[in-house]
Image 1 (tube, rainbow, N blue to C red):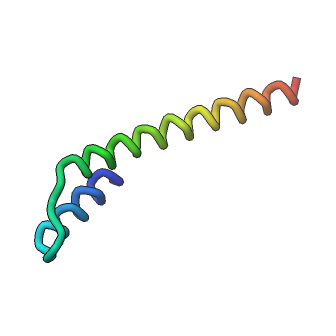
Image 2 (cartoon, one colour; image 1 turned 120 degrees about the vertical axis):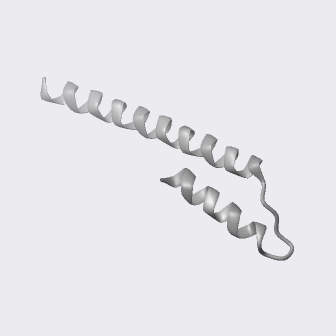
Length: 56
């Protein structure tokens, strides 16, 4: 969903003056999405581990 939004923005930029479509921007969006998912997963893993330790 987020990658589709980034691609849509790039397509719109193609039609705007002084802007251009860049496939590298779409790739950067994808890298940012993956990085964000990894950080979120690590955060929830740490939080889950801390909560399990408190209940035992």
